[in-house]
Image 1 (cartoon, rainbow over the protein chains, first blue to last red):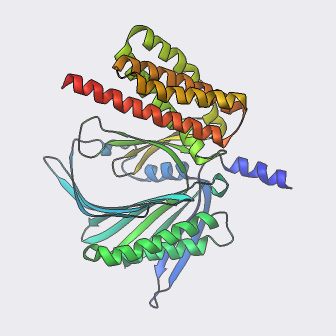
Image 2 (image 1 turned 120 degrees about the vertical axis):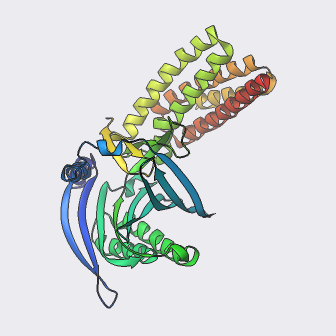
Image 3 (image 1 turned 45 degrees about the vertical axis):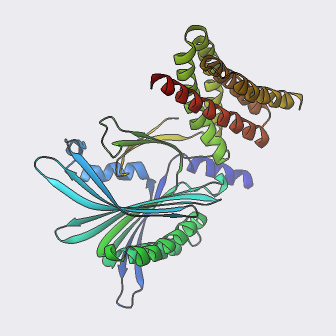
Length: 319
Length: 80
């Protein structure tokens, strides 16, 4: 029986599954009314489907020349928690677009949580778009699932987080997502209080939606080819099926390669000929071993590209 | 267990050499030596799954970072 469960778990871990879409209405008494639609299909397929519905199918509308200006309004960090609030202005000769970004990162002994909310104003109405990613450090707690939450009623930003916490608490019951969404709920409750207390000026009313997911981000590389203040792209390695400890996967899949490349580049620069050759000869089998260890620690890995506001552009399976 | 001790000796030697050779070329060779040690430890860890070995690899990695930073610092001083 235990063996069967293990096999099922292996099969289900190959990709992130979008479990549900939850629509939330707030009743007059303040209670959240949930309308849950079970989806249970691949998240990447669902996102691709969403793009097909839009007028920007090939994403060519996203490619235009623009300048980015960011201004940090609030910054707080304490005890592994970091909260920043910034104003972002994207502009070119003909148009400009302003919005605010709240980012929150929490690192604890058992998990890392990252949350980014974009606050946009469309036709006089505020919209909050939140992406939450919780990565447990213990691979046994890892559950490759995502949920989309749409809050139909208007709510203040602090309430937006409180409602998300409440919804996660509700949907996690009797579910594989119980542990991860419980942790996300606690962080959201903390964030709700922090916004109320420290960002009262920006605690405005708006509608919102959120994508809450659980993937183990192993490596983040920021690409900034134009030299703009904000990196243009982030490339991440995301493990969908961790079988080894978090430290071991990060070390084998990411840190060791960085050290080998930096070490050999520098050794070649300083020592030239023989030193460079010795370094390359030593580094190639080391990198090969590291890749084998990486693949055994994480048999299913995605390479994802995000834009500067952490919107996912796309993912491709590395192996 | 003997190999465990050998890797530790290699590691101590690495620190010793990095203190001994102050010149850039010596440091570059220490870097190459550290890469060799990393390869050796990685290969060893794939046979004997041990958390301790992972931490030893981390330590070698930290000394590598220190060597890289030191070398970049030296190169920049010469350029400046």
